[in-house]
Amino acid sequence: MAEFRELFIGIVGHDLRNPLGAIDIFAGTLLRRGKLDAPDAELAARIIGSSQRISRMITDLLDLTHARLGNGLPIDPRLTDLRELCRNVVDGFDAPIELEVEGDVIGTWDPDRLAQLFSNLVRNAIEHAAPGTAVIIRAHADVADVVVEISNRGDPIPAHVLPLIFEPFIRAKRRKGSTSGNLGLGLYIAKQIVLSHGGTLDARSADGTTSFVTRLPRSPGHRS
Image (cartoon, rainbow, N blue to C red):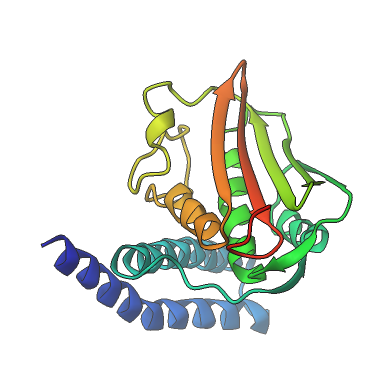
């Protein structure tokens, strides 16, 4: 029964991508033509933003199906500079984010999967950060591994939730007014991406700071 459910989710998620992509293309075309007045242009931009949130949800559902029915998430490792990758992730958000990178952070990883991983973690940190505070990303070499820590200041993750947050559909309390479209799969997918690289992902939340610490061996599946 569980296998049928996850297969059904995968099929539906895949089939939803085509009409969703059409919505995104049509709304983007209207904006690029420049013939909309300001209120209509704002509506078109909101349509695009909503379609992108739905697209992320579909991607998470498809990854859930693949992880449950297969042997983890597929990766395509190649030489990757985490300094550049993290900078690109930061540039994708309109929020206060501080990036600190030290040492050699180059390794053999799947850059697309790591961008998905860190975007999930940063998006989660932004949503739960206290107003007026910045999300902090720290990356550094640690012997043969590279460690990336993403932290925010704000309400802690409840103690009874913390041990479960990497399970699918488990979420801490959503911030009031949030429009993230979060299904509770982001942290589960993040964990699967890290495991597919032979690494670890841990969370801690105390004294007003929540941190997610990713440890990646420089070559997937090979730890020092």
